Image (cartoon, rainbow, N blue to C red; front, side):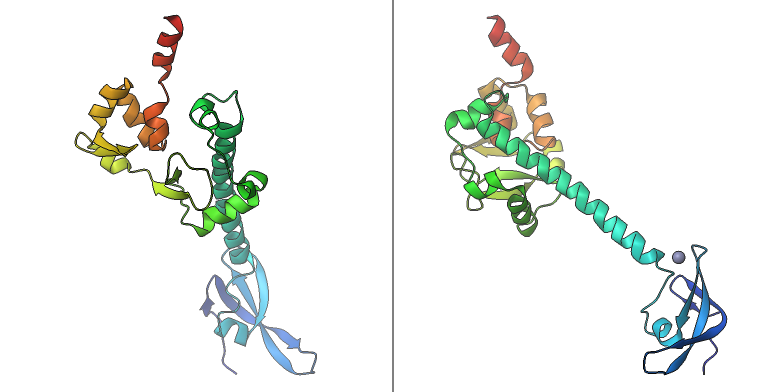
Length: 217
Ligand SMILES: [Zn+2]
């Protein structure tokens, strides 16, 4: 028998021998009392220490599970609000940008409309990441797996932007030119694209200032 006293296995430091573990077959194995870095104590047989099966009192697994769950929840929350936003744009007439979506007969495929779970699965399986936004490939097409993709919001590129060309509706021009054409302030366009708006929204939704001017006229 190898003396394991004072050896370290993951978070565990072996303190001393601690009786035997008796298997159903009647076979016995020495247990070792270990001190975990978190303060708990646990008795483990040598083979479970040697093959890394046991590396803590259980705190390691609890922490990993918690971290995974948290990142899953966070991700689910963001995807959920993207899903909600999409439904509002297309079906809620009260929504500020409805006129550019539902108002233009942009719809959502049945599966996505009925089930967040299905939309969520599609997102995860198709390259979703927290720095990405939902983009329709054909801007006049519906929200569906065939017409959607995740695109990165190109923050860095936009920050040195004067010559970045933005393509929309078959036309490619600089942000400055888009600003002149749409009447939406250049700084507002930069802000929107950095905030993760898709290009169609950024270029078509009037800025608040613009809207109130229209109302007062
Ligand atoms: Zn522990």
